[in-house]
Image (tube, rainbow, N blue to C red; front, side, top):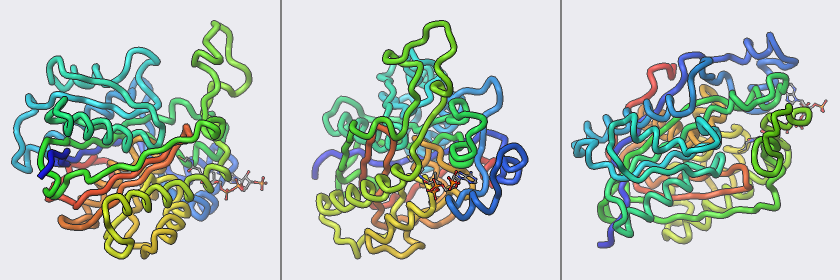
Length: 345
Ligand code: COA
């Protein structure tokens, strides 16, 4: 059998503060009814002043390592790679991952960030799995962490309703491709022609910091919701289908899809395209909103903790996000006990 990266630990972290739709509606021109019916979201979590993305990343990573230990895995000293998928790093430079590795006490391991917005976690899994199969790493921590509350326009009722902060992490170990938890293949893609659909215009080298305030609103995250909706449905469905073809699973053989949690209507449309029943699509955005790179591992931790993902099931993970980017991977769900954020409920 060939060498593969095997998922053996799963953890998640959320800030202490949940903001309900009613609380948003008290400040912005929106209603609980609009947000629930148009997105499926009931609340989202936001970090406190002074907190940063790495704080959530470290907690989720500690929990993923604890989950791996409970599953009989080796100690943390064996981790030799840390990848943090994020589009809200602690600072523009350096990357967030080395600091996370340092705070976890992992020693001088390889550590870098991946920026693929809501597809970041799948891209980071692909990078870690490729390094493990190539023999360049043996045990990897892959973290998806974002704090979009720090880049949202406080007056934008649409993005404020959708996005929330959070982190999720997995431990990948070197193993064999026929083991449960082995990542069985990847489909990754991008379309830079859609870069303006999901963007923060200022703050990079194109519209650089000049000491003056950026042009009106350019420092905030901006999104063209309707176009993004359509692109998300098309690209997650097509990517998941290409992945199924690559792995050799027929649509009817798939048990569960963990898709990026952007909008419940997007999730249902993707499920329909893949010939799935609604209960085969994991949904946790009602409790956490769209947590960007954290979305897929947070949804996996919730679903596994609730008994909605069970060992032996054929599972596809699929994401879509800014870039535009998309990506999918597949695994037989392993016997893994997630260590979840206590603030989840
Ligand atoms: N509360 C009340 N009304 C709102 C609102 C809110 N929070 N946000 C938008 N509206 C209004 C709009 O202003 C618009 O009003 P108008 O008709 O007077 O102009 C109306 O609702 C309909 O807007 P529209 O954009 O057509 O709604 P929609 O059904 O497409 O839903 C999104 C908007 C953003 C929820 C939806 O397009 C979406 O989920 N897109 C994908 C977003 C996403 O997932 N991004 C991340 C992907 S990685």
